[in-house]
Length: 416
Image 1 (cartoon, rainbow, N blue to C red):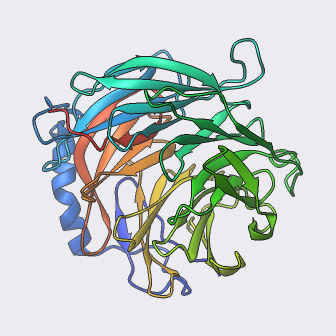
Image 2 (image 1 turned 180 degrees about the horizontal axis):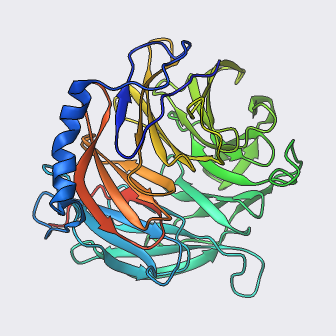
């Protein structure tokens, strides 16, 4: 059942504490909400939102993947002040092409980045770059590059043991598994699986478009989200052989025309939240972990009832406590906050302007106190403060300029 969200202008916030199955009013604002926003508006008026500060010990390092443009050349590094939410000026860590997704190893020593291109070493494929982090964490030493075995790689994740990288190739419509060597370098893909088929939309779903590949919380199964097929294909990873093996009986079939882009699991692994890019919605599935059987619990719109423009939903993330979901919209240029209830269904909390244009990606910092939005078409990273009690977002003072930011990831290591 769809939920209807009130309209948000600029950085205004409207909060409604009702179940998502109820229609929300077209506009809602309280004096308290406006009072909470006043400090942010004053900060903006004083020019504080564009200030970059000098990083200091205790700050949190993160990396920014970009599409190449006149103002962006690769992966950048910046620090977040965990007390104030300020960001340090971005530093170019490594020049590379279209770093559309980034991973950092668990020990904080290595970085792996998709290079979303259609040709690599003269072949019709994208690539994946492996780097070693050096110095204060803001510079990389290039280790090697390997073929992603498909055009347009757009997402990657680690295997359960962290000894392989899984890749989703959007234009190639396939997935691959690349082993990681002891020195951090990537090996050539041992497993390559081509998806086949199509779905409802003749323009965007004429063929497979793998958009994400992630393991479930238990590390037992690997889920490949295919926007072109309206299907989430499920695999087991053979660690000894480095192979992905299909388990089609566990596939999750979504409503035709949804265009699934991202999925998130609850901690128990028995609820799956699917972001529909094309339909701009969120579908909650109940998952039987033993049989793999899945059933729809609810589907909610991520847009207000009176929105009539073009929109593509983009990112979906859950906070570490498993209490809140955050989803972004490109077109409406908003971030929606949803509360996860005891049965796994969700309740609408808030819809907030992303503070820019085209929030392709966002990330929650390790403390859970801040959300950083990568606004691709306004060339900015904007910081929001997260209310620990309600999950609501409030405008922060952190904001930096980076050309075409499309991917954000925090490092687990401390370099300062």
